[in-house]
Length: 212
Image (tube, rainbow, N blue to C red; front, side, top):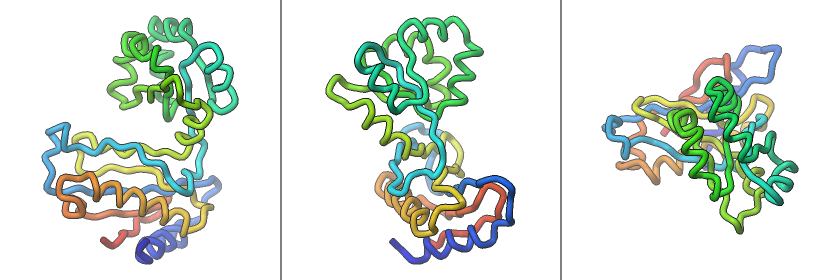
C-alpha cells in the first residue's frame, strides 16, 4: 500500500474540526472517460473492508426454520414469509425498512417471493438481498457483510463510499482505501485511467486528495 494513502488519511483526520459525535470517514471517487449511460459501464461492487467499516451495519435476514434461528445470533432483524407478505401490502413500511437497512440476506428459496413483494422497493435502491444457498453459513455471511460497503456510481461520475470512522487508526483506514482502489482499477474498463481523482474526508471535515 502506498504511503501517500496513509498520508492523505492522516491529514484528513488531523484537519477535521472537533465535533461532538463520531464522524465517519468517506472516500469520494471521480471517474472519467466512461459512458455511464450504459449500465454495464457503471460501478456496482460489494467490497469487504479488511479493517471493517468502523460503524454499525444494519442487516436484515429473510429466512425460516433453523436458518432463521441461527440468523438471530448475528442479524439485526430476522423476517419470515408472513412478514414478507405484510411488507408487500404496506409500501411505507417496506420503504422505511429499506432505508434503515444496509444489506439484506435471504434464503435462495425466498428470492422469488422477495422479487414479487419487495422488488419495486429494494431494486431501485440497489438493495436486493444476497441469496443464501443451503450450504452457506448464515452467521458467517452476516458477519462478513457487516464489514462490507457498496460501491455504486449509478449514472454519476462522482460517488462516495464509507471507508472507516474517525477514531480508527490511519493505517487501518488506508488499508480499506487501498482495497477499494485495487478493486476499481481491476474492474473499470481502462483500469486506473478511468479514475480522475479521489478524496478522503471525515463527515464534516475538509477533503484531502489521495494522490494516484
